[in-house]
Amino acid sequence: MLRFPGIIGRKLGMTQVFTDDGRRIGVTAVEAGPCIVIQVKKEATEGYNSIQLGFGQAKRLNSPEKGRLKELGNLEHLKEFRVQGDAFKVGDKVDVSLFQPGDVVDVIGDSKGKGFAGGVKRYHFKGGPKTHGQSDRQRAPGSIGSNTYPGRVWPGQRMAGHLGARQATVQRLMVVKADASKNLLLLRGAAPGGDKGIVFIRKAEKRK
Amino acid sequence: MDIKSVIELKARPEIPQFGPGDTVKASVKVVEGDRERIQAFQGIVIRVKRGDVNATFTVRRISSGVGVERTFFFQSPRLEKVEVVRKGKVRRANLYYLRGLSGRAGRIKERTRELPAELRVEAPAEMKEEAPPVAAPSVEQPQTSA
Image (cartoon, rainbow over all chains, first blue to last red; front, side, top):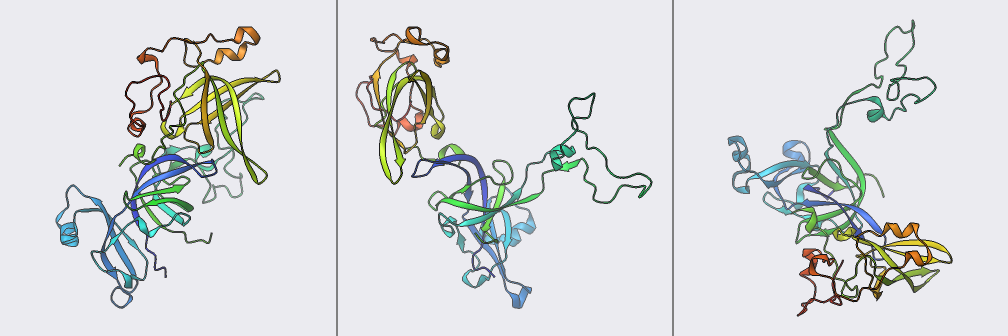
């Protein structure tokens, strides 16, 4: 298991930075941490190893939340990371000094909701022809199956439906900058969700 | 924290204040093989676009009979310096009309009088704080962006 936990952050938006050789790269800015360790789980007691982190300032906590966090502060967002928790104890702070420029991370967040979307947007269907006597077919899905056999639509047939607003992971984004004094992370590329959305950042699970 | 405060803009005292219509000489670092040299591009500024790290200006020149436009980022580390060769007298912000003109028709009158304050291209507020204090604002005042 990784000895490296993740961190909880808030997506600030995208901007761009210049590299030393003058290229511009698009980056996502994330206000990440500081997170507080609120529980350490051990194999002997809970059956697996992990730490739970809390982030953000909650306006109000309900009674169970208060009991859970006690004097650790009014933390708004909690998240568990599967790591060997030996190096951590409850109350420890985790911040972006975890990351170095050049590290490769995965970003997990809730994608933007697109509502009820057609096949063209949802599955990149090609739609129908624009010309040759066609009408009202430009974004139609086309055939959804055969006739007498099987006489029904196969399960899993891709059709229009709800798109987005679910958890999404973007793998292998490079850390461009990690500024512990500002709790700021710059990641090369896009991260799921809109601005001000909560994201989880962990070390990339797949190799570089 | 908001996204605007994320990127620290670099102060560029070596870039003077200039605006559309001015003739400038922009020096850019170019990598040639394994050597680096400075390449100059001189022409008329036809557009100045604001926007923090995204701020650019576009220079147009006629090179061997062909119009060439090149856009530079104020914040680019490749942009070595900018010199104002001549100030131009123009009445609009974007001089796209020059693209349709050639020869004598495309000339711009020189501006000898100083622009009134409200027409000057000002540096964005957050960059001005970093600029060295100058007693009296003048066109030659070193500034960080346009």
